[in-house]
Amino acid sequence: MRILIVEDDVRLAQALERILQENGYIVDTVNDGASGRDWAVVGPYDVIVCDVMLPVMDGFETVRAIRHAGVNTPILMLTAKSSIADRIAGLDHGADDYMTKPFSPAELMAHLRALTRRQGAMIFESIDVGDLALKLESHDLTCAEKSIHLSKREFSLAKVLFANKGRIVSKEALIDKVWGPDSNADDNNVEAYISFLRKKLRFLESTTTIETVRRVGYRLSPPESAAKGADLPLRQ
Image 1 (cartoon, one colour):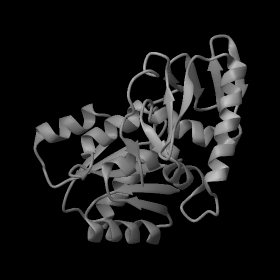
Image 2: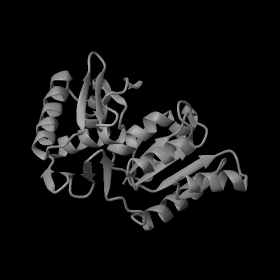
Image 3: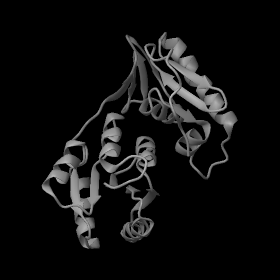
Image 4: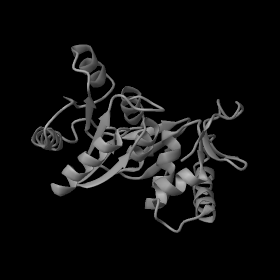
C-alpha cells in the first residue's frame, strides 16, 4: 500500500515515514500544502496523511484542493489542535478522519486500517474544465458526444493540467509529477506529450486549449479564461 505524507515538521515526517515503512507501506513525503495537492493528484495513493499547519497552503485548503481535483483517496488529518471547531473544519473540507498530536504508532496504524477498510465511499467520476471532462476511471477524455482514450502517460499529464485549471504548470513540475523526480525525462518529453494532448483536443473539437507560456510552462484554459492574464506558475 502507498501513503502520501504532507508534513512540514521534518523530524515528524521522518518518524512517520519510518513507522509506515516498518509496517510494509510505500511512502512519499512532501513538506508543504501545494506540493501535497500536486502529488495527491498524480497518485495513486491508498491514504493521504496531511498536517493542518502547513506552509504555502494550510491543511484545510490542501484537502479542499485535493477533493476539488476529483481525488477520492481517504485523508487523515493531523493537528496539535484538539478543539471541536478544528475537527469540524477538517471534515467539512473533505477529510475522512482526524488525529490529534501526540499519538502512538499503534493509534496511527489503527486509523489507517480503518480508512483503508472504507476506501471508495467517496466517488468522483471526472474532472471538468470548460467543455472537457477527464474520466478518472476509464482514462477517457470527452467533449460533448465525442470521446477519446488517453494512454497512461497522457492521462497523468492531463490530470495535472486539469487539477491546476487556469494555473501555469512548469515543465519541471510536469516532469516530477508525471515521469518522477528520478527519471531521465527532459523538456522534449513534455513537449511531445503536450503535442499528443493538443491533437486529441483538436479531434474532440474542444474550445479548451493548452496554452504555452514561453520560458515558464503550460496552462489548461477554458475559453472564458483564455484571454485573461497569466497566473502564477506552479514550480518545484
